[in-house]
Length: 324
Image (cartoon, rainbow, N blue to C red; front, side, top):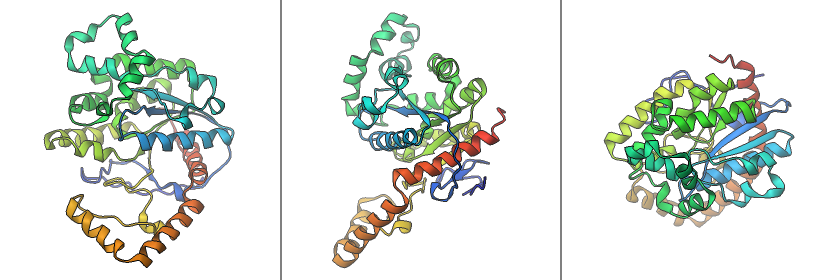
């Protein structure tokens, strides 16, 4: 199968160019039919950070199922409560019954209070119950970067972090229950999961690059530097990265390819105002951009087209996987 590689160069912190890793633009990847079992690990949401990403992941999973693949969603942190992920007519029994891994309340308490590391299982089960997690999901602050720096770092550390017990539970579930052909994790803030999954479940692990930079950049500079350096190290455990959206350092769906918008840099109020002024004062340009953007997205970047390309990548990494 032909494969188009976007970059092998070592990336700086500014654009997160992980050393010796493949970056795929899905619009270029060819496709070959082969049915697979794909486990998608998706963080549940409580605020705006994960919401759009969850919706996109849900659309991809539905398209994979419609093409005959067995696509499973395993939620992390919080329940997935959107219609396109919880529609009973579009879910397998395994998906509906899957537990929420890394329950947000319990892992937060363990991270913040050392005495909670040894909480009894009955108490942890209370914190991980659906009613408690749904209440947590209703609080937007639960998915804001401020105050979550240490937990984010611990999650990136994987087995070396405070969540080793949760990681072991996830790996056991994948190994003994799901037995997938490939695991797709929705963003690189979860890079700490990759090594144990590859080594113990013995399947390739794919990550999506989405808008993790927005989360990290909301932290103080000292935390940012630690996160980027840690992600660069953990990226060595990943088989491939998918670039799904344009945001800061992770260019994906290029606006210049669709003609449907503009980008601005740096991310300041002044540059945003200048960029908006340039198009709002030109009605003809604005109308043309809107028309062209919609046409190109519907033809080339809809969920069905991108899912076909994603299938090609899954087949590639499965074929190349050695378990090392």
